[in-house]
Each structure stands twice: as structure tokens, then as C-alpha cells.
Length: 473
Image (tube, rainbow, N blue to C red; front, side):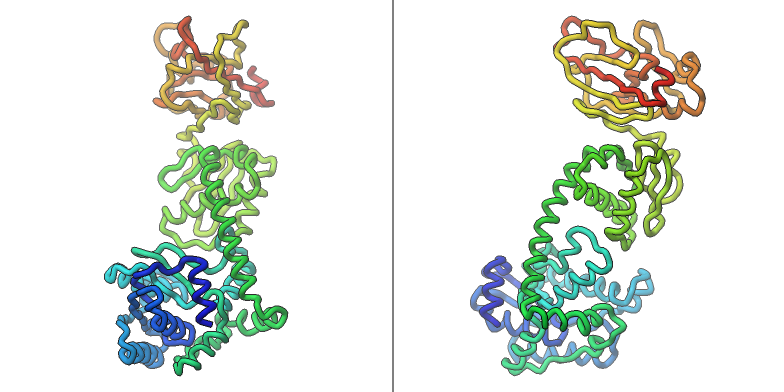
């Protein structure tokens, strides 16, 4: 077994020479095998090892005895040892977590503290190939999404270094045999046989069947895990890039996106864009939420429907509201203020949807030979500083009309053109970086950024009116 693990470590460059490694040791066969393996092979990499054992205070005297067992083993083999106790019940009550989640949170907090205190390079954990199979199956069954479907990561950044799992290519049976050959009599956690835990049911009923079909199923699953993770990370990076073109606004735990731009992106990226948004919002609100691929899939199907408005709800009171092309993600029900303050960037060049039609933006190098139509606007592109935006009207909005002295209320322009009150709140206003109104499509152009004989680059905007916009065009 040692040769297999050494090859696995070498293949994935898990351990650098001269590293300091903290080892999480419970006293069970998995972690005792890891402790023995790294101690026995410490001269291969010239590493320093520190054993860390944690009593979660959930199994009374049995858990105390586990910690003392690890401590005694370390004394006998001259291994540096650190022991800690955590009150999982208190964490569970204060943070309203399950027992498993509270134990994990407390355990990793201790690991973090010890790694930083020792300036360790790695935290080595004894998850093995059977654990990987169980985890991937459980996550598949519960509908996990993206990189989570890859199961247990081989490595990940943690504290001042990395978590590593050198045993993901071997089985529980191999670790038990390894302990026996080394004369180690590990402790046995009585809770591992309880069918109250989902993992134990998978271990008892599903894993034996898979091993019977293929004794090397753990190897196949580990290969799949690495491939799924690599693919997912690559797609996640693409999704981050596409998110910028979909995003309309992000502030104070609220995200607004363009539905049309989202739907125009490739389907795998659509799912990941929604995942990125959810991850940002729940982390911003400091809420642990359980959302899966089924939630994301249902939301995307809803957004693809030909609806102008509606509301969706995610766990922990996260709301999603659609209003024509805009989709808002927010906590609570105060979206009206959010909608009124949105500014959607206008793509240059490109097409940007609005309530009355699509705005087509193009760069030209000559002024149009024909007079502009009411649905067209042109300006000196080089006079602009920054992006331009489409937004709804706000109280007190004023425009400096082209060819007129002074300013005029936007409200009065709507009245002059007989735009009814309800439709005024849906009408797009094109504004610059400073929120100065440049153009109200079909109604009035502003006396700003005017093209002159010295202009060399022109920005032309053309709105292609939809059914609503054609009523006023």
C-alpha cells in the first residue's frame, strides 16, 4: 500500500520537501494509518509532522479515551502532539447547525489555529477512496451542483497552507490491513455503525454492491472526481467572465441581471452564473443555505418563459423578481426602490434590451448622410468619459434639450408627448457615467456630446421599437 500512496503523492505533488504537516488524528484506523504512514516515510520528504486530536465532547468517556490513545501513541513514537476539546453542543445551539455541521465547524477552527501557530504547510486528512465514492453518490442523489459533484477535493487552500488527502486512492480495507501489519490497534467510533447517518447507510448498502461489480470502483470514482473538478473550475472561470456582461447592478446584497443576456449565454454557463450570484448573496448575508441544481434549473426554466413579471423564492427568504428584461435577486420585499435606481450598461458595440425595444449601439467614422429619425441618436464618442447606461426616470430628472436654452423636466416631456402615467415609469433614459441624460428615445435628444466638424468617431444608437414602443414611435 505504501508504494501506491507514494506514487499518488508524487503524481499530484501533494508534499513538498521540508514541509511541516499537521495531521488530523481521531484514533480510528484511517487517521492512525495516515499518522503511521507519514511518520514512517518522513525521511522521504524531510518533513516535520504534528499530530492533532480533537475531542468533540459528544461521546463522553469514549471520546476522551480516543484522544488519550492518540497522545500515548505519539509519546511512544516521539511524535509532536496537540490535543484540544470543543463544545459541539454549544456551537450547534448558538449557530443553529446540525450536529455534523457544528462538529465540522469547530474542528476546522481548531485546525486553522494550530496550522497558523505552527506555520504549517499542510493539514493532512485521512479521507480514503471509499469516502470519495460515498460522498460523490450522496451529492449526486441530493442534487449538488458544479464542483460539489466532484466530491472530496484532493487539495484545497486552508489557513496558511493547504489541506491534502493522500489516501484517496486506497480503500478502508487496505488501511485496516496496513494498521494490522504495523501492529496498530485503532479505536473504533461506535457512531460509525449507526444508520441514523446518511453516509453509514450508503456505506452499508450501496458501497458493497459497487465493489462487487468492480473492486477498483474507488479508483474510477477518484479519476472522475479529478476530471469533474477540472472541468467545473474551467467553466466557473468562463462564467465569471460572462457574468460581467449579464450583470446590471450589484450593491448591498442585491444583484440585478439582464434576462436576455443570461439566456443568450451557453446553457452550462447560465447555471454557473446563477450559482455565482447565489453564492455571493448568501455569503454577503452570512447565511448558510442549502441550494442545489434543482433550484437553479427551475429558476432558469422560469426565466425562459415568456413572462413580463413575477417572483421566485429561494431558501432563507432570498427573492427573485423579474420585471421585463431585468431580474433582481434580493433579501426582503423592497424591490421597487431597487428597480428605480438600476442602470443597465449599454453595450458598445452591441444590443441592449429596454422596455420599449432593443438599443443597437455602433461606432461610425462618418456622420450619417440622412437626417436622424426619432429612434436614432448620434454623438461624439471621444467626448464621452466612461460607459453609458439605460435607466428608468427618477423624481426631479431634467434634460437640456438640443437647440433650446435651459433645461426641461422629464415629466413635462412625457406630458407633451402624451405618454400615460403608467408607461412613464417604463420608458428608458440613456445617461452617461455622471447620470446626465443624453437621450430619451422618440422624445428628445440632449444638448451634450454634440458631433462637430472635428469629430472622428461617432456613437450611433438606434432603438428597434417593440409592440409597446411602436405605439409612441
